[in-house]
Length: 96
Image (cartoon, rainbow, N blue to C red; front, side):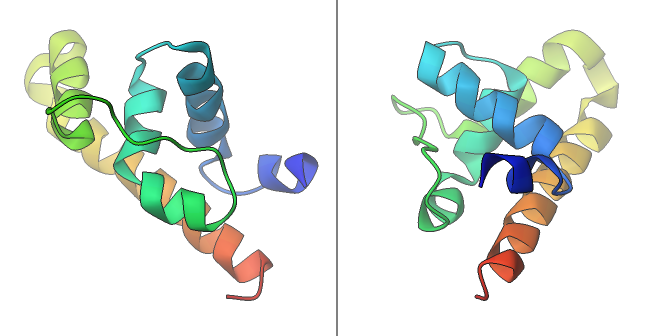
């Protein structure tokens, strides 16, 4: 199944994000996965929700803003769109 997932749009964000979460790393990819944790979990992926009180979406934007400044908004939207594309493609592949 892992090989099938690698071919889906957005896999370049979701799969490293899951690996980062498993390793305890708080990366942009990990935050993006945590934004869609519930949907990804329904697909059988080990996508844990963000710990603490800060929503994953806020953490993702904070991380992007620290690097990109005012350009963070468009990158934020693009990343979340790729994660949604991944989830949608995975759902279709599972016949949902």
